[in-house]
Image (tube, rainbow, N blue to C red; front, side):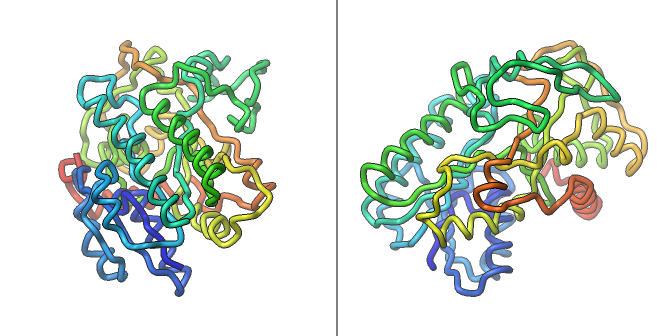
Length: 352
C-alpha cells in the first residue's frame, strides 16, 4: 500500500509515520511538508532513515499537488492547529484558511483524479465554542468537574459526535468543519472512501509545544527550563481540563480504515484520551513540581478568546465501531515528554 502523509514533519505526522513503519512492513510512505513550522526540519533525518520519500511541497499549491505520484490513501495531517490562529494578531487569517481549507480542496481534487482514499485528522474544535464555554462546571480537587446538564452530546464520558457544531467555533474550528463537509461531499459525489477523525489534544515527546497548541509539551518543557508560566482565564485557577492522546494510539485505527474502506461505521468519529486521560493545568503543575521542583506560575485575570473550561473527548463511537481503545495512559505521556525535556535542553527556543 502506498500512502501520502501531508504535514509529515509535524508532531502528529512524524509520530504516526514512525509507528506505521514500525508496525507494518508492506507500506510505502510519501511525505509532503512545506516546513513552515519552526523545528519541523529536525525530523528530516529520521524520516529519511526510515525510507520515507520526503517531498518539499505545500498543499496550498495546486501545482505541488499535481506533481505528486499516485497513492492509495492520503492521510492529511497538515494544518495550522492553533485555536487562536487569526484571532490574536500573531498569525494571518488568510494563511490559516488557505492551509486548512484551500489545502483540503487541493487534496480532494487529487483524490478524485487518482481514486485515492482520504483520511483527515480533524479536531475537537469543530464543536461550538459558545456551547463549550457554557458547560456547567464546578471546581473540585484542583480541576473543573462537569455538572448535570441537558446539552445534547455531552456526558461524564465527554463530548460525543452529537455535540453542537454551531458557530461561533473559532476561525480554526470553522475551517476544519468546512473541510469535513467538503470531504463528505466529494467522497459521496466522486465515489472514493473518506474518514474523518476528530482528535482531542495530541501529546508526546518531540512535540513543538506552544501555549495555544501542544499545551502538555509546552508546560512540561517550560517547567523544566524554569520559565515563568501563567494560568489564563477562569480567575487564574488553572482548573481548565483537557484530555490527551498519544498519536501512536491512532495508528491501528488508521490501518483498519485504510484496509476496510467499506466498513459499516460512522464516517466521522471522535478520538481522544477520555476522562481517564484528562488533567487540569493545576494538576499538571503539581505533577511538574514533583518531577522538576518549584517554578513560578502566575494567576492571570486575563481572558482568552474561544476558551473552554472542560473539553474531554468521548470516543465511544470509535470503540463500538472499530473496537478501538486508548493504550498509552496519561502518566506515560507525561513521563515521555519529561524525559525528552531533560535530554533536549532549550527545546522551546529551537521550536518556537
